[in-house]
Image 1 (cartoon, helix red, strand yellow):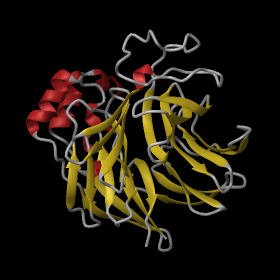
Image 2 (cartoon, helix red, strand yellow):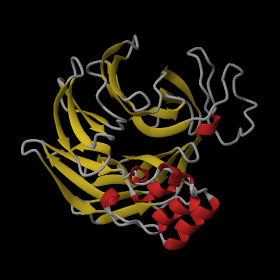
Image 3 (tube, one colour):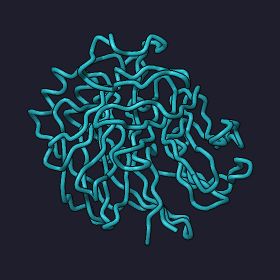
Length: 333
C-alpha cells in the first residue's frame, strides 16, 4: 500500500517567535522562498517503510499577482503560499492538488494539466473535483467562502460563509448568499460569528455537502434547496480547529481531526457519542480510512504519518516525514 503526502511547510517554526509579527518577514518568505519542500509531493511505501519525493509542483502565480495579493489582500498567512494542501486522486488517475492561491490537476510525474487561480480567493484549504472533473469545489478561510468553478475560472456556485452562523437543530433555512451582507434575513436564533471553512466536499453532488469550520469548531452537513441556498441538516460541535471530516456510512460514524486539542476521534453519526479518541496526534489535519480496522492520520508537529486502530485509537504504525504533513491520500493502484 502506498500513501501520497502533501507538505505544509510552516516556516515560523524555524525562526524566532517575534518575527512572525513582522510584515516584512512574511513578504520576504513569499517573494523569495528558501525551500521547495512545501511544494514537493511525497509517497510513502507502507510495505517498505520508505518515504520518497515524487515531484515538485511549480508555482503558477505570476509575480505581479503575488505582489497584488500582498498589497491588497493582507499579508498575514501568505507565507503559506508555497506549501501544498489537499490532494485527491480522480477517476482518471490524475490528481487535484491545491495550495493557498489555486488548484492544479497533475499526472503522477508532476506535469500540470490544468490550473485555476481566482484572484480574490485566498487562503485556500481544500480543492476537490466534481461534475466529472470538469469543475472543482474550493474552500477558503481567507474570505470565508465555498466556490464551485470550472477550470477556466467561470464560477457556477458561490457560498458566502460569512453569512453562516451557528444554529441549533431547530433553526430555519439559512440563505447562504452574498445578497444578504447585512444579515437582515438571517433567523434571529443565529449568533453572529466568524466561520472559517477549511473543508468542503460533496456527499451527493448538487444536493448535500460536508463542511468543516476551523472557527468556531463545527462540522456540518449542508442541504441545498437552490444553487446558493441551503440549510444545516446536521451539525456536530464543539471541535476546536477541526479538519478533514470523513463520514463512514457503512459503519455509521464520523471521523475528524481536532487540532485544537491534539486529538483524532471517531463518533457515532446518530448519537454523537465518541467511540474512540487518539490523544497522541499533535495538530492533525488529515484522516483517511484504510479498512474497517485502521485509519491513516497526519501528525503535523511530530512530522509523521500514523496508522491508528479503529477500535481504540491506539497507534499501530508510523513513519517519519521530511516536513509537516497537511493531507494524506491512499494511492489507488
